[in-house]
Length: 218
Length: 288
Image (tube, rainbow over all chains, first blue to last red):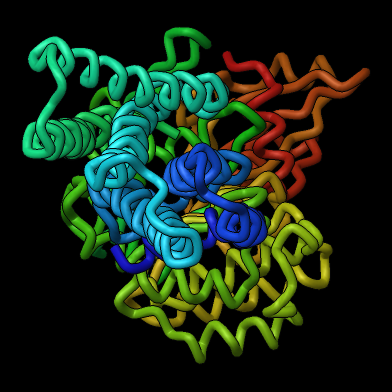
């Protein structure tokens, strides 16, 4: 697994370096700006959380340019571990993105005060970012193995839209369950429910992707 | 003699291309090199894919180290070094990064040995692989395949991008590798002169079928090509003819026993057959 994670890391590295540069510059700008209207900080947090994850899964297709994907299968690793490594890598990059978002939000709050109406809004911001990223990965990886590298761009778009759609769908469901104004406890429970759904989809997607990949031929 | 690799009636079909690997059977004894020869699309890579499980065979058995290899048999794959034709590794890596990945994949990865090969093959360790020439990428792949101390090397057109001098050096590396009794090499190649230099056995594949497997010495010293006129060709016994090919006024006839043919057909010129010529006659010639 160590070698597979290193492999995924190197595949992600060039894109991640560029994204870190953009995230740092943008972060400085967002933190420096007044946060009375929190749109900027919300957009930034979502961008880095989803962006790092997106870069991680998009890097999988880089292997298709060479025989490495085939070569890797001749190495002493199980096919299921190859698939698992992509999921673990995405999770690690999601942590990085979440770290960037947390640092920016914390800095903005420290400099300009709390920009949201309620504490739960901040919690829900991270729920949305993490939730979309998890659903996106859950869709992309099995679909990529199923559809092949030649369809990777459209699969990436579909996965991002699908992840966003799942979030919107779950939010609509929660709003239907709690038609009135929600209490902080209900909001937190709803957030946990969304994260749990995303995590379950992510966890279930791993054996599904491994099943598809087991039949893949090179 | 024990075999490190055994294929028994391996079949694989690709319905969309009408290509079928038809009951491929051969074995590779320990301490030897088997040259796997065939034209483009003959089925060499498909056979290697079936051996390495990168493609699922439809039927037959493949035994590596006496055992059929499943996905979970990582201990078997630990003992196999592989080189494919072309770009084996992502171009955005450096050789140094490749070493770090390989160290995480192979328990026996030998960093020092890999560095030695990089030096020996004059490969810069910090340059991105995409900036390597084709020959350099092949040398890197060979270095990587050897640096985890494999017992079996499976080389798919591994010498194709190398110049003659470097090819010769690589062949020496392969010969040194099989000095160990428990080592062996399956070497698929178009370059039949390479196989003549190093192979102990040669298997010819054509159109998905194995058309001949024999010891190289047997092919070179026993097989012969009779240069016949048409009238001489008509006097030959049909059972002596493996394949024949008309060339202007001459007909080249491949026979399995050159010595016997020289005695039997004294008026016909019988030349030693090169691997190249045998392949051409088997592939392009006609059978009776």
